[in-house]
Length: 513
Image (spheres, rainbow, N blue to C red):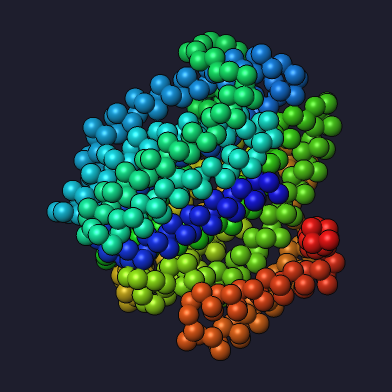
């Protein structure tokens, strides 16, 4: 709950940031340039950031804490921080110098002033991405000490810095110079995000002992685990950049619209998939006993986590698919962002629902592998997923719309659909392979059926309500439609006697007493 609460606050701040961004930039060339530029240094953050450190650093560090070997844990944390800082600094420098070549590879459809603006923005944003890598190291330490809330609320400060920048300068500058000012605001926010975590981390470590002792056994284990996860994250990031590359070849607005849709799509992924996976990883990594006892403990935690994730993700899928225009309108319908843009982003978001459940459940399966110190199996399946995403993405984004006579800009929806198909393939392989190692795991079919019945019933009623509020303000429509939608879903699941719903209601009643 602490992880989910922290992620919820940071994601709400992110949605506010995106709404303010949409107000000032809409689907303009400057919006395309900023979204494309943000992806390139973000590659560094994703490659060295939370996901990689969660898979390589937390299992080792948490195991040392479980054995009460605090001194070795402190040495390991200091060595990992030093190696991370050195590597990231070198990559930031290379990234700044090689920016024009990166733009040619990532956004070949950008030309003239739009390309020059993207280059400038990337060079500004790269140092901020380096700082966010160090923030991920802080998160690894905090999570291992069960300090979840601070780690996941820290991004609120980064979002607040960008929101404040837009509010302060948005009315006084044209779009191109405003995008450069916003990039500097992002860098300042990155520094603040690290700054708010560092004092607590230093207190938990009782000081930070920096070293480049890469020969220490635990540090070697972290590095050994780091490499396959790094490659795995790398190929996944390559997939994301292939999507951005293909979107840059589509008409103006495709890159920005894809980013807008992904911001919404990633909300349940982060809030439910990431929160459960992040909370479970230290517990799974600290499991002790013989092989049979560890397998039993992992099965119990995995099955419980899968139910928690599905309970919230299934209604998210139904809401995005059936009520997506309400969701998109409430967040983005302002200023330069028109109703036509709302429908466009909704179409892209609907395509992303194909793989939403698989992506979130797959995160928890990957965490189970990491707890078993197996980082190579998820890597193999991630590579296969990327190959499928790339091949299907190209077919669905460019040739298929042309063959079917569909407007070219809708090819970006094909990207999200193809990524969803690949996510299901990866999830199926992760589950099947893990089941052969620790025993049968997964969601019961009757449980899933009850979730879908409840979600579709609630969505149908929400759609009927929406029919009468279609001409009202976007925010009012969201309150009137999505509020009852959520209540009806929880009431239906409670009536079907699902333990997760009953537990949630009990918790709410205890809080209100």
